Length: 523
Image (cartoon, rainbow, N blue to C red; front, side, top):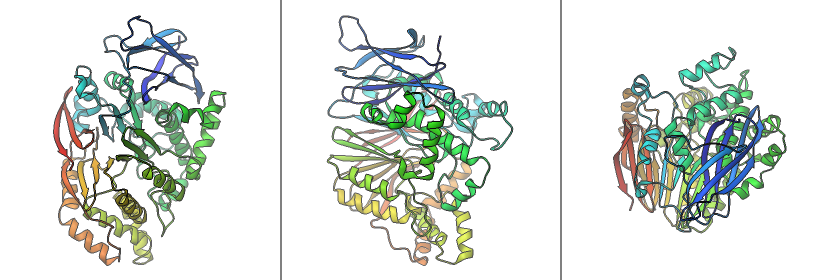
């Protein structure tokens, strides 16, 4: 009998369809049996799909189409044998998104999947996503979000848990030591991240949309052209980046797409015909070498809200002197998405667009020095500084920051930018326009007390004046608008909710419970 390895995960959901993703232990037919709300006959509708195989792992996406009501509960069968739900857990259900769109979005980023024992709680804190799953099992309907956005670092390929390191050590002793090397290790990394009982149930019943950040591949991924050249010179990076992008495509990206978008995907069609791992590897290698050959960004119409999830990692243009967060093709796509009709825009960017002003200016200054503003010797030192202190946010790609600033100011409607990455949470507001930066990070990977104080000093104190002075010395033009932090920072593990149109609340966990950190009503 085939085993259910990972999942079921409820991914894309709209007004009349839903997608369930699974990984199985053997090739098989996956069937989802859905019992609809208000169906007095007790019958359940069945939806099936075959698995496809890459690198010895088997996956399926089952589309439930033509739905006319919410699904009260669903079961999963593999070749006719029921494997879900698990005993002792509430039923997994599907709530459709109506024409009015979602009422509440939950979001966060940066979750390490280490154990939940006392020792790891002391070093990593409580897992807020796990506690949130426990909370929703008994929560009232009014507390349920309609969609969960995971904004990067869903897995840490460069900092695996002790258990994951044991798995790696049992199969190889070659570089990269202490990091993920290939697709097999990525598959195990995702399995460990998503199969805690509370997490597994949560992901089976709450729709998710995801985008990567650097640790899904490696710290500082695509920081600069120098970084890429240094990584390419290693003996192991090519294998790693192919595996990382291939695994991301299977485990995260496919579920972001609508059934129609997936039906048109040539790689998926090829895999369903048996093309296997070679086809996935070729796609991933090209996606890294030629970012314009694929698109990881995507957009959704959510009633009056337009959700735009932006790839701020793979799509970068790293040309010294003309660095861009988005290459020309990706920028043209973003311009088109922003221009479409909507009451408001919600933009998911794994890295914040609006940093505290002081550190923004420091990143502007560092980019100018990396481009040679103060000579060749300073240029080399500045590149080392850029990598050592993660100076690679939108501010470190100044031209893209200014282009996006002007674009959003012209929109003339509220723009809410949701981000993670920086391991603290805050809200910043632009002066002169309804543009808000809302950050929630980390879900589980807190800064040490020393680094917390260092961040407060460097980003919210005298650094504002120092950064502005450095930017002027490097002859950097002023940004198109000013902004300021209006809420936060908070440094504990957290998950946030955005209740549309303008209420944001952050939660932390204590044991299996969640409690409110703070909230803000945006003007």
